[in-house]
Image (cartoon, rainbow, N blue to C red; front, side):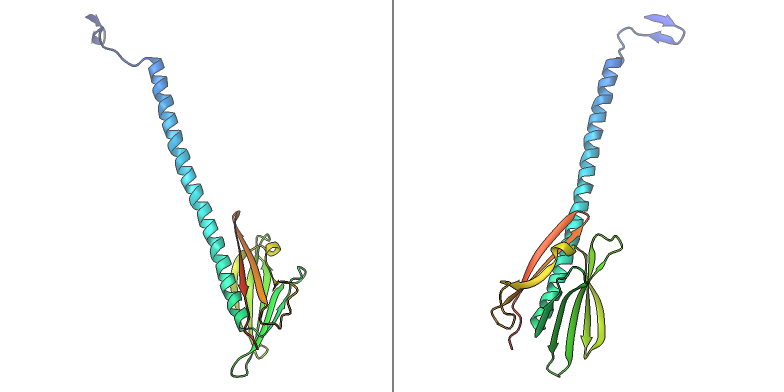
Length: 184
């Protein structure tokens, strides 16, 4: 034993060397880094999944609403001119002789990149309601037309194909809805 100012020091007592301390710090850093990356990936995946689910819901809602109206319509006028906001105009006469008209339009969202699909319902030429059908609609990937394009719209064998695309935070969803309108 050696006696010093601080008391008794035993020679067989060992501490951590500088190398051992550096190795312990590096291992702790690697484990912490791995955990941090895993948490970041989970949050990133959750965000992407959430955005994709929003895009799917927007496309589904638009497809359902337009399909229902196409089934009711007697006269269908697609407006695929990108210079106008109108996408589709539908008209029919109800069982009680009420004249119905539906006009679908696309309007820019505040961000300006995508658009909102609006539905205006007219009864006897008076505006009855205006409804926001879907958001984040990509106008370049959204259209309506006959399938096949050469089909006569008055034939019962014609099918209307409504293609709609929604894009939310880089997550895109496209669906094609095919509807055979009522005859007569």
